[in-house]
Length: 550
Image (cartoon, rainbow, N blue to C red):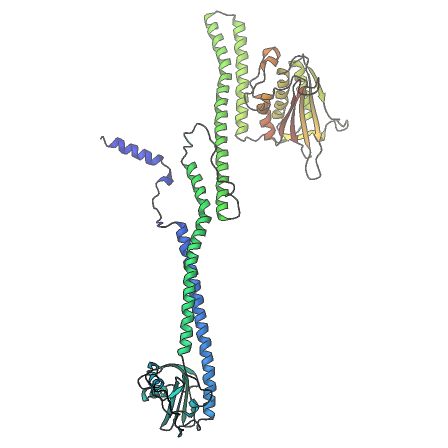
């Protein structure tokens, strides 16, 4: 039983932990991205260079082979024309060599092979002009075979094994590569003429040495390029990826903060503007992270402000409701004890109940407007509403001067078609009532208040607007209250209130919410004494609504 409590606590901590803190499967990453990218770059360069090396070697080999085949075709053509003249015939003996050491070195040369001995026999054409070292000829006429190869500028007769190897080739006038023991590799070409078999060849020693030298040089160059690309590419990739470290550090710094338990929202760090420049991948990531931080910070600040407003709203609403409730409770207790006049107590209870009822109604209206409740959208002529508002104000505030500022009305139509808006008549009446009551309560006796309706002409494609205004020449709104004048439970200085009576602070907030719900807005223009010219002061509230299309 003792182990159950820790187990339960572990379960709760696991349930409350973020999902990303304990991933189910972790992807294996043994190397950094810079290492993998540099190795991929080196591999790509290596593959490209090997491909180029193979292609160039193949092209070089093909070109060299084609040149040899062209030479062999010329040699074979000449041999076919002069085959009879190139058969073995008595030749004058070679001139004597006076240098015995030169003869010994020539006879002992390893390139000649064990059977490569100079002879005065062989194809006559190999001893003529135009022959070169490594040139080979073989002529077979019936059973007579004459062959030879030029080695070290002398003609050496081929042995029987080499002759049989050459005669076994197919005579198709195409080049063939053959490796003759004791003589080396040759490119040969065979042809048939009557009863003769003609074979010519050229040594591949010079071509092979050139080819392998080319491969060696290109291989060394490719190796140097691959190593350079690996080293320089890794340095470059590290330099280009370095800003990602700052991006990651910024994200880790934000992720390490406890945003739930923090009492206030602090300003988050951001990626440096020199890095977060859209245009490349790193800049796009940094810019996206900064944008996300801006959105998160704005959302957290909005949440904090909303929570603060909600707490203030609840506190103000509780305070406003507590006052009439306390008054009702006090008069009720006095009535129960018989300590006060019954008629006075009931009158005060009724007055406080009406005050509390009005406050609840205002709160309910604001709650409905905040919830997105749509108001009626009927054509409403606002001029009669303005007239009714001034009539009510005369009765409620006879110590103020009230006047109307209305556009001219066509006598025949008996109405102003341009002063019609689409809205809820009861809501519009409340707008006028709240603005008039605000002017009556927060201005001293004798203040002149003017209620007006003006039309703002539109264009051919857009409708006009109707402006509802309530202007007074009172003391104006204090500068510290102007930014929050449309907030809830915001009150003016009670010293400016007539007979010390204040308000609930919800009237202007209701006006603003109704105007927004009807697609309009509300503006305030105020000037206190001393801020303008002498004698210039007062406040004007303007509600601008779209005119109805009739």
